[in-house]
Image 1 (cartoon, one colour):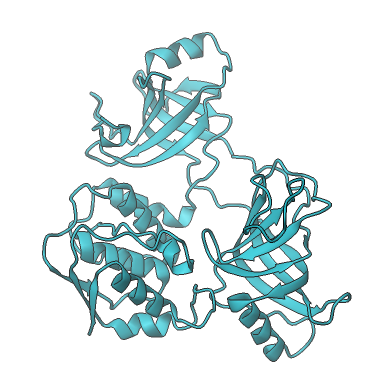
Image 2 (cartoon, helix red, strand yellow):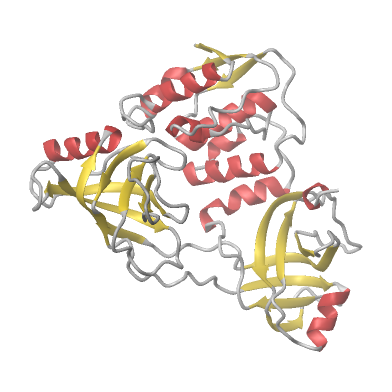
Length: 408
């Protein structure tokens, strides 16, 4: 049985909310602790947006359209204008293999540096000083990439892509600031409250040592089913005290919690799912976009729990589709019922070669109040050329995988 399929319990009157586990090399599951609560799991991330300049850039498709829109709208040289729907921008820095022909394939080297620019915004552009047919484009984004690469290659080819698996958006000579030093993000401490230590953790508390154990924090619902998990957290207990909840329980302070944590704004979604998967449709609509995205993550984590509906005609309630996460929630609900998830590679909208995942059997999707989404997402586009509105791209993908859509 998979860890996610287990049902957890303890013989205490307190709800069991978290379990700390790890897996041995032979698959044996080690239960380090069962805990009633956690403090410090929800953390507001520090702002990490940076400004980069794509030097001597030859943008194409959607990136070129963003630059052209910026040139038309700027009332002053330094006035920023956000480029709506630019999505994710990837930069691949290719270094040539000895004797490699630059015309052979999209990459010279298997050791290319791949960077992601998340939520990029085009802030400015100006003619290149070396070639008037090129431009220097200033973008602001959260940069994610190979942190172990500190030195910019002396000879390389810099290519721009439309997100993971997407089509090309041009090239540039370099991206000024991409290889700047970035300190590794530090994960704040985590306090586990009301813990019942397992045998191995009791031994660790008596004879403290650090041997590199990596553990997974399982978040449970009230019935003891796993609803989410935070993986590969270092087990470094820096302090332990008798628990504020009393009894034989202890409170544990871990020097470093999960590297990626939910923001405080989505805690109401966690509280809702703690009571179990939703029984009524549309419960996700009460939350803001980040809450809806979290709702969709919960639904994805339990995909297949109930299976897709067998009805050959599914109905999608479009009244509350005012953002992309809302569309994901509503579509999942139409396909698999309340709290359901539609398994689909949305990267296909950006040109991913997967082409999208076909449902077990074709069905008809009746999309009610479709104009709500069309109006709300009119400025969002993820296709390479930047010409097709997001809703049209979704309709194209659904048709491509065999789903007949009726707009109402």
